[in-house]
Image (cartoon, one colour):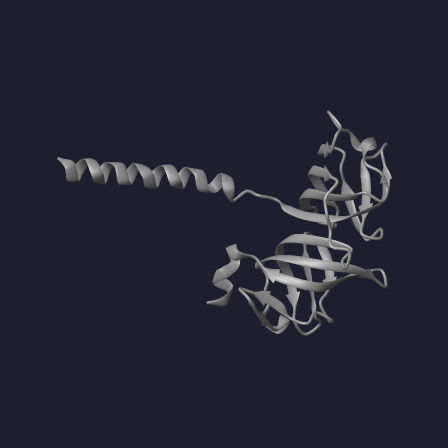
Length: 185
């Protein structure tokens, strides 16, 4: 009897865990950057030297010290974090916006998401719908070691620190996130 009871409890635990996993897997991508411009009437925001367009018209906005924050509580020059996803044209549809957040002064932005359309011969890729130049990237950090960008592929979860240069996003640092640890095996 005890063996059956223990087995039944173990199986129930597996089913419970399985039900929780899909909810955690639905996390959205994130981008951090300085607000370049803001249009309250349309909900349009641009960040990172006007290179990234954001539709914030339906976003939940959290501003430190402000109850029930709205878009007008965000100002040009604020460093914000946007959670959402890009549409087919690369405009980020914001779900949540947090103001303020911190960003290392060496970078103009940080993007967290999965790589898309990786082109190692041209040293380019997309992340969160944004084209990024990886030509000057010294390497990709993976579990404490650095690998060549030439080994990168699409679908890898990364943090990319970028600067704005010559009207484009340029990768300065790229770190493979732990959920993509199978990339190295």
